[in-house]
Picture 1 (spheres, helix red, strand yellow):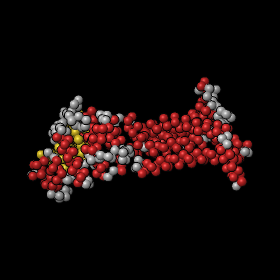
Picture 2: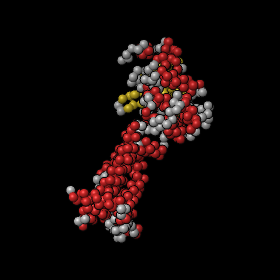
Picture 3: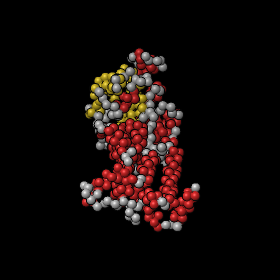
Picture 4: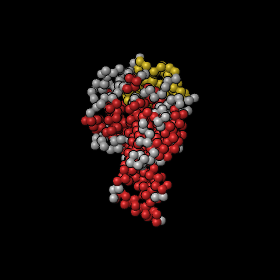
Length: 244
Length: 235
């Protein structure tokens, strides 16, 4: 896998939401969202449970259809080619009923057809060296999430979407995933992640989008958000108070 | 009781003396069942998977159709195939009536609905788990079908076994389109039917025991594979 990400690929950023709404059944999940995600940024999507953070990420990934408004990737509408340049790491990693290496080979065969040597290199990068032949579903929670991360790295995406990637993980897995996020960002990738861990958001994020009840209440740079949040909801959220 | 003991004795004699007639019947039974299962899987596995993962108008109607077809009476299938391939039928020119090919076709009509319906049910469960991942990864349909079938491989073996069981134990359809001709289309089930009607119960029972043994061995292999797969959380 080359270090340079964008050879022959479109740059997907900036990502622009214009009055975007997502409705599931009768419920408005995302309500007229307007925001912009900058190129080469690490954006933390914050908000209480049920705010619409996961749907926000999955909408970017094309998993939900947009009822109204627009979502543009560097002025382009979402299409298969754009989606192929994204990688999503789900909160609950879905692993194929195969060995660890076969899970990576599946993705590799879909896209870049990387050599086994490189797949093993990526495995060692996520601390799963020597786990190649182990059935993937027998891994622990942290190992599963790291394998899921390795799978995302194989795609060599332009945009990395992480849905609570470190929820319930031990400190080793947490540090490893955070280091990977920073490393990927340092080679030019844009990263959007959701988390409930305020200190993690402070450590990683360059920007913050704060959602509540499907609406973007704040979008600002990370330091400003944590230092002087504008809305009462954001203040309460940061202070660990219940939002009604 | 005597007749059972006699049957056991005779079946062991037939097997261990490598009785040529018995092995001819056994081989043809396995051959016909194997090929009907093979071709049914070739059609049924991808179709069942496609029906499990693709939402389109009429999908439920197709699934109901295949579910209903699972209960098709073999003699009715035999009769329909007979009418189609008999000399005066639309496919009479093929000249396959009273051949193993006709028996394979009849068995395929019986097995395909089983393979399609059970595959669709099996894959639907895995699809619920995988669909977001596959959609996120932009996995093309044909590759998704292969991946689903591969990941459901141990469960699909059960589906195949159900199909094989239907094929090897079937008598109504193969006797109509095969004709139970000695050294040509005589299989275990038709021989059992014939020998019973002749009053040769020992031979009929002996063949029955062999038939059961085949089912037992196949099941044993399958269960061993599934236990191994369960340990690795592949099912």
